[in-house]
Image: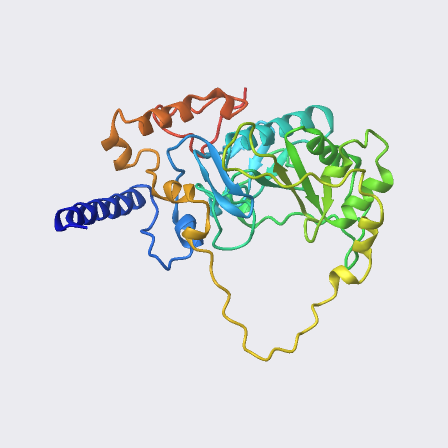
Length: 352
């Protein structure tokens, strides 16, 4: 390569590096050092990426572009643990959670949902907690019904969800479990876009033993560790989405067979047997930005709504995308929030 070409390449690389740093700062994301874990980058983002809505990667290895936040309060839901800033999701998921809240209140005797973690503003690995919830297609919903009043900010941070289990057992406590719980779970599983509903094995067994209605969606309700005080909704990749990978379909049949009985043996709960190691284990490597799908680098770099970069870009397509996100009525059952040129932000929405 001659000196002139080398200079051109070096200049382009310098400009590219400068743009990355500028976008990271403008978008509310700290500059990403080569050895910085991905959770530090995505955990630092306070606002979503001003990009078309897109779930990128797999539930436990990906990120979210163009996410929107479920409002703090709705007619049939309230968001919990507001300080975590994990109420962001793909518009399809937010619309489904709102729909479930309305239909469960209207038909199932469930007064409203208490909504837990969904995803960070740009998805990605979290600083603590979940391994999944990275692409905006997972949501946790408490098994505690919404009270008939608006919870205070302090209550949303400190109120504990109710376990459905008898103390020190794997079985449901009939003093707290109701048929409304069962109807809520079966309704959630019935939606075609729902891929799985994760619950504690004891809850799955209770449904297997007592549900007398249509059991066609029972296979979607999957037993897993934890999930005795909340259930986890996972939806499929949106139709036509590129770069998003859904989970394999659950096994056929209701799942009330030997696969469920296994959870009530000692094996799932036994501590792992220590292995004789001849060499010390290497320190577990943190997931880096480069480990995620390449599109996640663009998500990390993109400006956030109302950022200096968005204003500077002016008539650039990225600004038009921001307005399209804000004005897309399909993003929510109640339409977009009145924030022209902005992605909907997490503020209360009036009841209609």
